[in-house]
Image 1 (cartoon, rainbow, N blue to C red):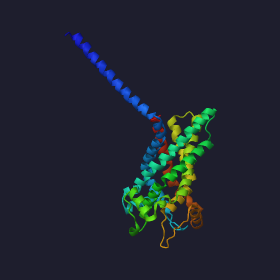
Image 2: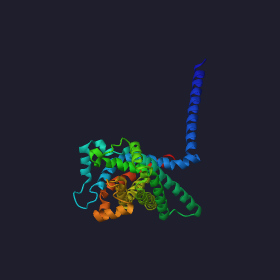
Image 3: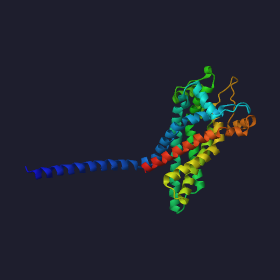
Image 4: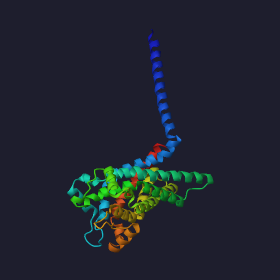
Length: 333
């Protein structure tokens, strides 16, 4: 057999191998593309992307959330006395245990994000897609009031669904404030949920649900609606690149989310932490009673105690969540 014949045969084999590889790659890409664009996946992706984004953000922000909760529970029932600082609380937590104690309740935080953020971002995207489709048919644009309504609805629904995980998170973070003999020493979020159900009943999992829902509605109004509106305005009035627009819009959203939701977050923490005293009574009867008692005995400004810490917890969490969700949305569009 001549050298030319051998060379031609080798080139033909290489070409055939290359074509097979190319066809295989195209087939895999087509299958992936078809799977991502099935009706089920198109409906599920906003929820999946939202949950993943929230869990990544919570892992980054959990120590700040731990400090925020301890700030809100400090000095309960009195208006005077020493005022704790975020750094002081962090030092105290580390001095009594170890650095990883700042991550107490992380399992509950992740479960909360898996439920709450999955639902709120998923519902918000679903509502917004419906509003955009309707606006497109009418030849109009989605307005801020519609964005706000979508944010309020998504936040309220998601908060009610995720309240048990939120309750477990607060109980786990507050446990270290009790005397040693009274601590539950929860091993995990599952242990906390089982302990609450055994000791207080299933309905106790929705303790503090009212302020939790209102807080979520306020937070989503500030976060999702303001993010969506700020991004639309920046896109219209600036020549910034998409990344800069997303980052700026998420920072604006973080501020409004913090300002609007902190009083309700404060009351939610107090209600979820409370347990019956020796007389069998709870310190607060409900959201309104908690607002009234705190305002009377501790002063109205107590609701905004730890605003800086709360903002440091909410704004980066919002930014990370929205940036990751935006990126995941781009990858899976």
